[in-house]
Length: 511
View 1 (tube, one colour):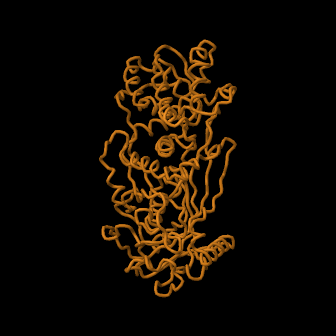
View 2 (cartoon, rainbow, N blue to C red; view 1 turned 135 degrees about the vertical axis):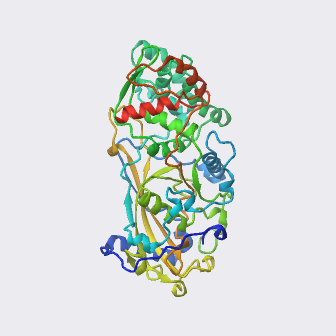
View 3 (cartoon, helix red, strand yellow; view 1 turned 180 degrees about the horizontal axis):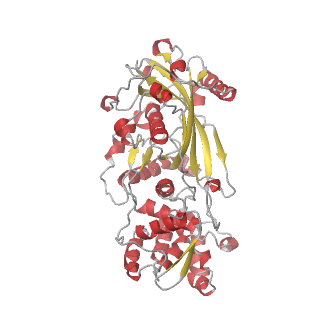
């Protein structure tokens, strides 16, 4: 059932009597559902801990997606790391502790996240009548690297072929190459500024001779290295990339702009993405957020493998289903998921979904909830019967196929488009608890590996840096000389100027 159900009120929506005509469920989908439910009935504990079926549409530039180290997983340190990230997302970089209590209370109301929250669609029969069993965004969020801290974040010279000449293996090796072996001056005199990092190019653009943003990029990993002798490979700016990927337009082409000192600086699409990612990581506004907060390293489970601690149950399937359908299918705007409840990397922007219903008792697949639902009283093989809401009348199973954008490697490609993105396709199995009218009132996951917390900035939000100039930069002319001071001040907080970044995006996007 829903967490905090007493505080959760859904608007009842009358359903239409007529149901649209649907195509037959594919044999492949029916077989996948049958296979999973058979394993689930034989050994629910083992099946609940399976990783969801996942496939990837991988472009040439994709690197392996980062995960926590085995040490962090075994020690349970990933719990504290994820909790810190969750708190940061709730607060926003400039918001203090204003919103952290939302996660502590276990906010699980989809109306608090989706754009159409005031008119939340919560009735499965109405969803079917409106043809919302599948949807895909018109504008695809763009892929980017998560700019890992171990190689310098946005200070990493990804386009310099000589970076790996000394076989760097840790943060210190990358730092030494860029600061001692190959300082910036050599690139300036040899006219190879296009090989510099995104942060170095930005510092040149704003005429910052101290290279403040570049220094800030290196400092992001320095503390971890000095404390632990290494920087975990998963640490990076995915919390900035994920919202920037759909809040900022796609950079489509390389651009050249001029600094106050008259230097022409070339920014590739990957450079522009890097600055947008950093801006949204370090100057992020507050976000809409739902999902539980679990500080238990090994949460208790029942004999079926279900997590019994409600704080660790994460986003309820009923909340999840409504969020996906309302945000992607109705509002037509992306949101960010923490891809699984445990130790896989979080923060991926959602692109598309499709789902098939099934009768949880028989395993028979259907395209409409009306055909697939079973009366709660008749669901005799229900492994989660003791957790059901007292107001649940019917149960319906759902197999949802979700597509979300994942990370790629930065390149010196002159252009960028959707074909360069990397997409993961993953399947989630769960059921929905319904009242007599078809309204979703809760549900149960059939796997413990499912989305944890979900979040998005509001549609009209901007990431605004400290010291941001109010005037508009005409990119046909050099950057105004008096912007150097504000840029240096903002860089001390690891923030590029919003007025610079947004104009670079517009220019690269052709707007």
